[in-house]
View 1 (cartoon, rainbow, N blue to C red):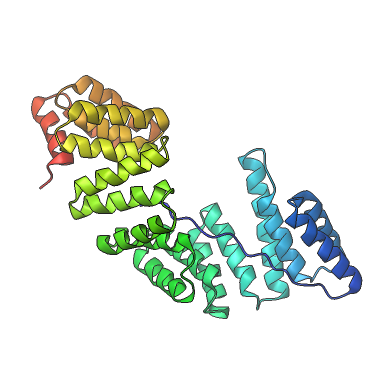
View 2: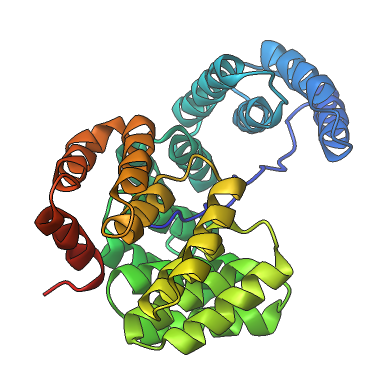
Length: 328
């Protein structure tokens, strides 16, 4: 399943009650707009100390915890924990703001807690059925949970509200693809390309749909366009290599996969594909590729161990090749 991107959490630009609070709030907003997140966080903290029930300040401080630059994963996790605490406190203070649930849901998506995200984002949509950002983010949560149909329903609901968000068409195209609705996916990617012909991603995604539809020439043309725009696009070289091998241009295909590995040395499918391509002609090299794939992807070690065993006999090598390129 391809990755779907979520939208940024919404900032609540609400005023505080007292005049002093309003001044602090405006100072914090100004610091945020200038990218001075540490200063803004300190100002919101002062405001919250004065008024612990200021839900807007809590939400905005939560967003700042997410935006602060971090030096490592441990610090990122700590800041996300602080953001979660602020959003939860804001909900306790004012459970009626859909923005708070959206922000908490978006945070959970970033944390990989998709079930929790789905709950929070459903709360947001329940309070505002026309909340575009929450619908988009809930679609992402559904998609990450493997619920492509539910994701598509949310994307379509978002589409009824706005048609000016490119991310909607990219993400909806991915949902269409997973549901086997390849023509609809092509339509969304084609529209995206018309909006920004210099973005490589829609070309690659449209190529994937063309491959499923049985149009390898169209797919290859899109992949060539993708690497012209973005020469470092390892995934595009991966698909180009697959297409060229199926066309019978083995040496050229292997060269494309070498390029893909050079650009993305941790991308497991490239090693797996190269191993399959080499299985009959060079089982030693094929085995070496499977061993790298196994090291990078220990969760699927059994799959690669099986292929390594099959490299020991001619019948086994032919079986691996057939399973990849000539399935029943």
